[in-house]
Image 1 (tube, rainbow, N blue to C red):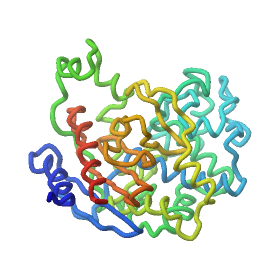
Image 2: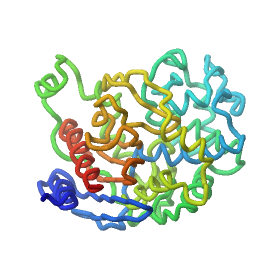
Image 3: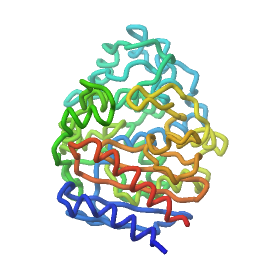
Amino acid sequence: MPDPVAELLSRARREVDEGLLPACQLAVARHGEIVVEEAFGDATTDSRFLIFSATKPVVAACVWQLLAEGSLDVHQRVADVVPEFATNGKEVVTLEQVLLHTSGFPYAPLGPPAWADRGSRLAAFARWRLNWEPGTRFEYHATSAHWVLAELIERVEGEDFRSVVQRRVVEPLGLAHLRLGVAPEDQGDVLRVVTTGEPPSPAEVEAVTGIAGVTLGDLTGGLTDDLFVTLSEPDNVAVGVPGGGAVSTAGDVARFYQGLLDNPGGRWDPALLADVTGVVRNTFPDPMLGVPANRTLGLVVAGDDGKAAMRGMGHVVSPRAFGHNGAGGQIAWADPDTGLSFCYLTNGIDAHLFRQWRRGPSLSNRAAACAK
């Protein structure tokens, strides 16, 4: 009888042993406890990795509390809370659209060093323009939407968004290593992102996609490996980019998802938690993947259409599994049917995008099998 834990660890170790990744770390949790935790390469289980877009649900989890308390409403317009946002047609954008990535400004520019200063962020909001009518399609907002969420948090709480997330989400769940915004002098255990491998050839891209002339930029929404390296620089880790800048161990991300499964201490209103973890509000097609987005107010749901692997959760999880992966192959999900949560983190950005894409479902399949 195959040992699912041994198979998971062996699969995670493979790219490190082959020199394709410098380090990785993984954790499986169940019933509120870590049951598998391991690190390979230049890392220990206490090393912290940049988790990229796996950050998004942590910030959304703070917004969910504000929704339940009535400080925010999904149907309200962002501009009603942040008047600086009400320019260039954006006055119609709602909080729901921002959470669903249907708000129409996926590539709105805001980067270093401007994103470190609140005034500069607000000035950027005023300049942003819509790419399409809000609510009419889905396109992934890699960082732009969550800067808006961060500002909404600050407006209603009167406090820096990073400290609000820490107070409302991180500390109550006992996440000792997960942080959004870490001073450079406290980053000694944070592994910097490095690029590895060679990109697929144009022939490989055409063979996989079936379309001639497609570039890697077309497949990544314009996100580049250099951007991911930049995000891991000390000054940018200190900023705590709300759409992709948190650092954590795999264990703490798995614990975060256990918190969403178990709701310890009633941190979230039960009805709202059921909504955000199970009610799909966005089924627009993903322009990069060609499958329904299957997004809730902050999460992705595996679904029962056989496309869960394309949503980053493998073939073995239940249709009710939910999560949100990150760039570079970071994996983060929970499955209500088995009680498992899983996280895999690496600091290696493999330039061979398809090898990276194959790794995710392979690891998720083996992690889900640990429930048996």
